[in-house]
Image (cartoon, rainbow, N blue to C red):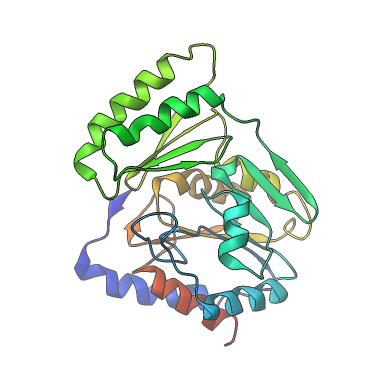
Length: 257
């Protein structure tokens, strides 16, 4: 992963826009990361905006793809349903810890309550650290306190060390750390999703923006898919959008709106 030079972003965005909007919705499975990809990052996970226009585009594309459209996010499914209401789309949530397809909802077992409590005490380091407890994982966001990154890293290591019998890993992201079960990833969840109708037999098209999306980008060649990133280059992507606003424009165009 590397930052795309600012001077190249406009040209890269135009190329990505042209490639993406030529796709045939009847032949693809559209997989979309959320924060930093189709919506702009907010000061905290709770301070974000999903526009009516975006919801209309997603609803139209859900119909055009025959239902082969899924959100692939670090957020829990209940949070995504709230943000995108009244839409209730297929979802990979929690970086792969939970998946909903139709009426089936599969979720990993929760982390120990005491571990989550110790992790959440990171707010004593700095009150601007935001805790997002998903049960099966816990995310610690330090976007509003970037100078606390190393202190937060040490706090997480100490809390996890107190539970040597638990299988745990730490997933870094944009100004956040997520403590979760090992072997859980967006890539593995997408692999499973693509074996089910209406996704199976289609070419997956994924848009993401963060290191947490790398497992999906790495999987796409195996599935005959195509990847697009936002603002940064990742290995194997076919195009780079300049911003979430440009992704929303591309979705609107593909939806014929």
